[in-house]
Length: 122
Image (cartoon, rainbow, N blue to C red; front, side, top):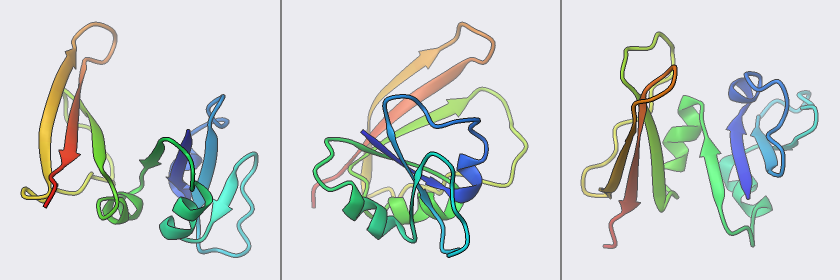
């Protein structure tokens, strides 16, 4: 299992998640991430993941936007409150994806829902 992150997004994690390969996207040749791999584009990162059963694309905004072109499944987590921030998941093209499941998790400190979308076959 591999995860592709934008450079700003990986800074949020104190360390890579265990048991997963992490690839940070950055066009900055001088940026050297710690404990993760680096690719200069989403396309290059996906090439690096060839043969992986699952690849998760975990934003920033530009990464999300580019990822919509190649995603077959989207697992979108939504919170039940407004959150301040500067990154918003892009609108899904209505004709490209269809909701296949929705599960609500009301218990815990932060109630949330997970909505799964699958790409429509043309």
